Image (tube, rainbow, N blue to C red; front, side, top):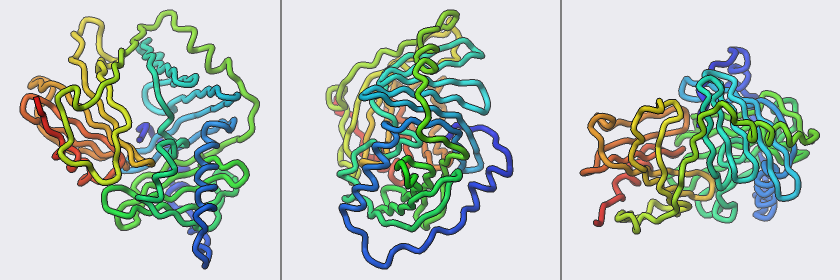
Length: 336
């Protein structure tokens, strides 16, 4: 999912014109070997201490951010600073996430169950990947000055995108990820432009700003766990490979909204996952002032579909082909 910034042309060119990968091994990869590689990628995002700058490009948009991640036992600390557009800082200690906008002096404090953005792209369950994707080694390359193992992750059907992944040989950390369309074309790229792995943890650089919220308007969205069925909704048929991962009712107050504005009605959000990618379905009462027309948009790999359904407004978002979003929207029905 893009951060939407502007980047130097030279760096964009470096990301957009990679040297072709070395030829894949002639022998078929062993399933245990593939699982080991994927497990290293999965574990490195949470266990390695690293800091660097990563860039996301796709669909004519480019964004960059500075990231630092530290782990200590079961504790994780993370700091992300957007380098483009409006200043924004994200601080995470385990499941607690603070997002700060210094310009407007607004802070959002909420709970997050897991990291789902680069470089933590394999948090949905490695066990299920083999059922919906074919994974093959594609040789070795260098990314951000580091030797990397390349993996090609191809979908077994048309409901999902493919991926090409570059993982650091020494640590397993994901250094680059390309999202691939049905013809193998690159839709979106996330990649470190520079990264240092094995840095000394600086826990206070994360926890300090999380404690210092004086002068900020602090928003604490109250999330209440629920189920689609309990809210009077159901999926007529399941989109192949996707399972419901979470369902909550949440307020949708904008961090940039003024204090005088009336809060919007709570929104029902249901998250589905196939083990690698996610689709979110948002349901809210139809408001003719805010919901004027149905539309589809795409920024890089992130597709969005919005439309009216009776007295409700449906928004479906995910890094999946447009037809998959439509399948989710068509399967949703009101039962009370």
